[in-house]
Amino acid sequence: MNERKALILGLSAVLLWSTVATAFKLTLAEFTPIQMLTCASIVSAIALLLVCVYQKKTHTIVGTFVANPLYYLMLGLINPLAYYLILFKAYDLLPASQAQPINYSWAITLTLMAAVFLGQKIRTQDWIACTLGYLGVVVIATQGDVLGLQFESPLGVGLALLSTLLWAGYWILNAKNKADPVIAVLLGFLVAIPLTIALSIWEGAAWDISTKGWLAVTYVGLFEMGITFVLWLGALKATQNTARISNLIFISPFISLILLSQILGEEIHISTLLGLVLIVAGLVIQQLKRKAA
Image (tube, rainbow, N blue to C red; front, side):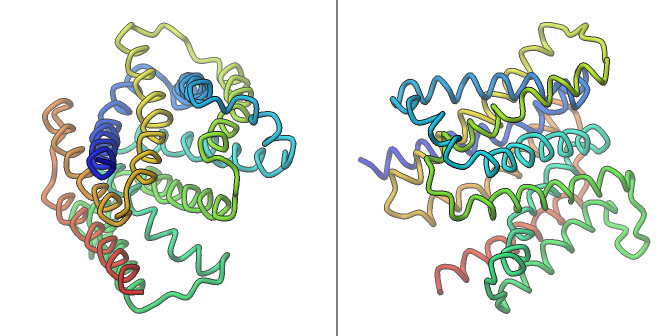
């Protein structure tokens, strides 16, 4: 029964994450990246707070922050503030079919950063995975013109890669955090929201947003930055086979490309599919290595 529950929760999370690249582009059609981050963060914080109320964890929120305020301040500055602001800007500059697969290479970035900051050994399989992953990024970013190295938006590609460094860094900082993960993520949003509001005021962009725009940003807040994280944690907690549930995530980028093509009408280049296959192949190699270890 638990395994069935884990599979349902895991698949639900993966399917929801598959829709967010499309939701990002729909939202960015009306919001600036700063506006989008501000509104989505508020929605996420409310959603996670309601989860804490349901799980009867609200009494631990203040105590968790007070126990290590500088740590949670740093986490909040990285995620959601810097990470999502940079990621949204990358999506603003690039087709979503390019930005999403590049961002997906964060797990490979994590391997390299874990070696530098946590002293973890990089094995042969990791080097192969990194080579395949970053070759995939180059194939996607150059639309297959690997030797020419001509990028449609060098800044967009750079920001997408920078987002992988920030996301990997966030998880490295979280590696030894003993706090409840939902509380930890909620605190990040509570730290970031006043700063995002200040940035929105400083930016001075107009707020003439349609109902469609408000629905899109609410969807992003709920299903990229909030509830889906809880579903994924629930799946991992319910299963006895973490690897099987974790491998479901490999479905997400391919579903995402189909949605981008069908809903937004984005052209999916053969080079994008090839690059994504290279990135996923690298991630699979990492998984095989972990199982063997």
